[in-house]
Amino acid sequence: MSKDNGKQQDQKVISKMFKRSWFLFSSFNMVKMQGYGYEYAMLPAIDEFYKDDPEGKRAAIERHSSFFNCTYETAPFIMGLNAAMEKENSQNPDFDPDSINAIKAALMGPLSGIGDSIFWGTLRLIAAGIGIPLAMKGNILGPILFLVIYHIPSIFTRYKLLQIGYTSGEKFISSAFNSGLFELITNCATIVGLIMVGAMTASSVTIKTALKWNMAGTTLKLQSILNSIMPGLLPLLLTLAILVLLRKKVKVIYLLFGVIILGIIGAFLGIF
Image (cartoon, rainbow, N blue to C red; front, side, top):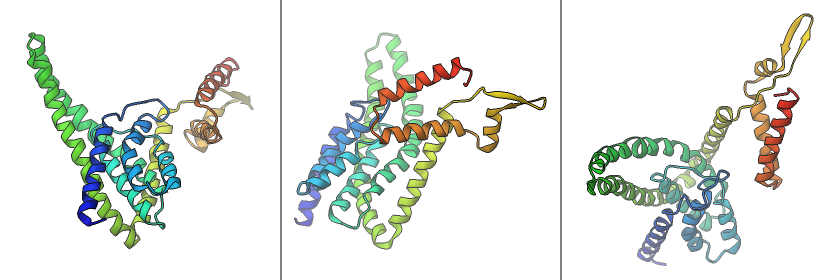
């Protein structure tokens, strides 16, 4: 394939991915959130780069069915970067496919912070501030202006970030891989992802034990002892236990009911 034909084919892939990115919130659920919508948007790239490699295609589809959650406007940058990485993976047998999800996990948090503050925290309020007063007066321009002011920058940003993610990612990946920098970036991205998971566990999972006993006239509380060993130890253990069960293919609905039953029994027995 000539260089010009390659660019045209890449542009077709980007256009198809952009159209599918409108459905990022399709099949949204509390387990993988935007995971399936992200996978749907990635399919044009996967189909193109692995059209002669059924096993590679299967692995790529499975890879992109993982958890994903990012601001709607900034998520396409990660899509473009992942598409460039999938292209490199399909052509380079020495490429580490685990780095694809590692980069995804590392970027979706910071990009969500940027996207939420710009689009949800600023642009949406400006659009609403202009549109609502007009709408309250019965002026049809109210909702129209709101949609125009918000969605034109949103659509433009999504498309350009998808392009930038793909084109810059393709160039960067090639040079970084040849220099050995990519391995360092992958390791750093993995560490950042683990830090994010740890922070979410500590802030979102709440479990404390009420067990205590008297010893030599002193009341000892098990929770205080655990906190002295490591704060948040019980939430961490619960999260790790659920992770192990998920890897053993235990259904999420069973885990949800299991946690509820555990909480009820524990509270009844005075454990929690």
